[in-house]
Length: 76
Image 1 (cartoon, rainbow, N blue to C red):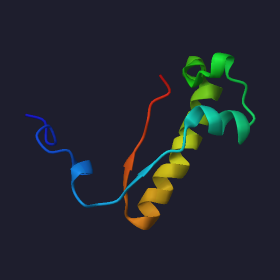
Image 2: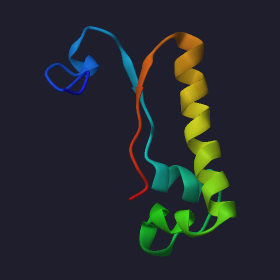
Image 3: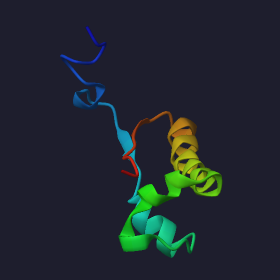
Image 4: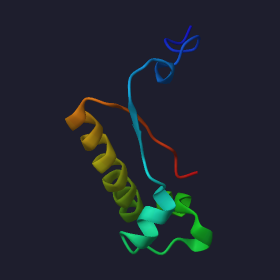
């Protein structure tokens, strides 16, 4: 059985950081054109994948710095 199937860690009293909306962040803060406001198109090539890694890495590093759990959305 999966470790968290019966009680996900989000139900504990621990604070979790969530990312702030990849599509909006990539368009307005990174100035990346996203066709139809869809970030999954970045998965099609290495440069796009690097941008996604960079975007999510900043949130992961912040969560680690403050000892927080983290919940990330997907670009799909």
